[in-house]
Length: 204
Image (cartoon, rainbow, N blue to C red; front, side, top):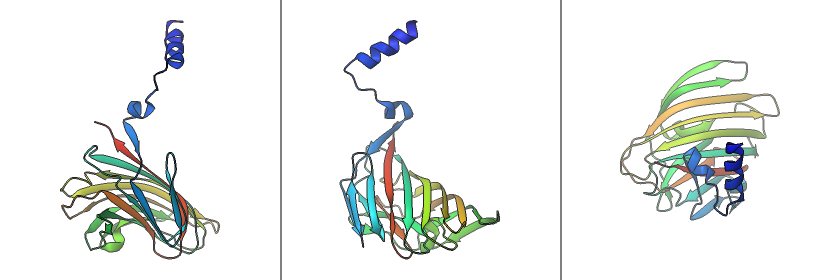
């Protein structure tokens, strides 16, 4: 009874319950967004984009948090496409050969491939094998993107299409430049994509 009474008191109080604090995460609203070849909007709790070849979330990293979690969902693509990300600062994407990762990916048929690549294409979040539209869900973890140190990252993602092809990624990587980045861009290698992105900062 005591615990039930305590919960009732909390629910009846005028104080907001900070569930993000309990989880150690705070939802971040970008200062602006840039949609390429389509449209985008900042919603109450997410960034939504439609028929865009790229979507940039500006001003989402700052000195307030060191580490971040980015949740992304693509509900469809207009062509066979790899979905990638790029670090971004002062309105410009970092597109040089400075991304490296290693990890495991699975493909249709259950094959497992150990991957280790260096190059501009190595920051892809999911790889489309054949057919579309493609549906993608995943989580990208970024460590110290705003600080002037090497940005490390990990991501887990899964994608499938209506033709039955699928791929799953578990990767660990780094961006070798010691540059402060306050933004991030997601882009399709071909065609356009529609979906939602959310950015959270990890509370200390």
